[in-house]
Length: 119
Image 1: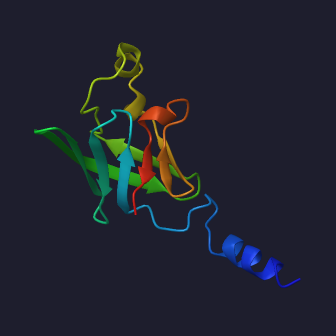
Image 2: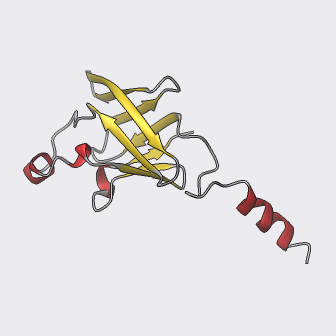
């Protein structure tokens, strides 16, 4: 019986999207090995992307909006800062809403370009 209490407390502290933390934070993507690809979601509705590989650093900024009821997050101006297959660009993956679930930013059918909580 005592074993159920921690399990129930874990369920209570998560939202309907199974997140323990708010969407604001630092996320990483590992599509390009030996590189750091970071997405920083700020509380003021803006985000920053930083891609670093060797001595090359690329940056990008934009805005985001979170829809708590559906777990959707929409990014305006999220782009690929690294090489990806041409169909990823053609399909405009980042123009579609992502899902904030399990404390990660997920692009359905394209988990390889999703962002995972770094903290």
